[in-house]
Length: 183
Image (tube, rainbow, N blue to C red):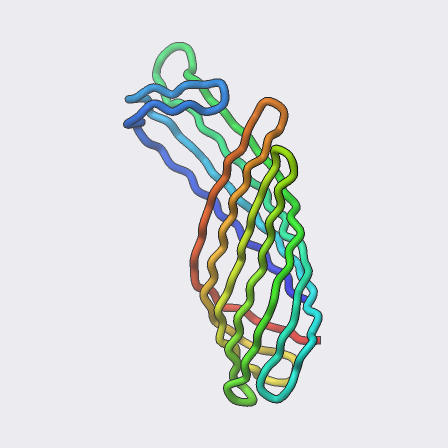
């Protein structure tokens, strides 16, 4: 079983260099705005191992990614009346199908490739997610391991919710360290 949690929280203030149309509001060139983007991702997957010998382990992994996205933008103005502001949020539970390949370099060291994918298109709703990692893991004993790796997570959603249309595209790459427990 694999579980993970990621959180991205970005906030910024900027003077607009072009006019933006967000929802029913228009943000003119020259306005000072503050925006916030928050994305939380929880994933859980279960590995079904179909091949395991001294060197190679292969598995398929059905699972679930739960993505919560919040966005807000507001003007920063000294005018007596406040300027436009907008906020929106969406939660998208996405079933996933993945695969794992573990190649044992030595009895203690392994190289691991993990990839989860999802795509769905129903009516006006469509979404795609890929979550891939390339890892090196050291097995400290029969149950515990330590690892380092590189990850790439890409989300592409096109969702219609009433009169709002979401077109969300994000790609994150990074390095991480982890502790593994095998039971």
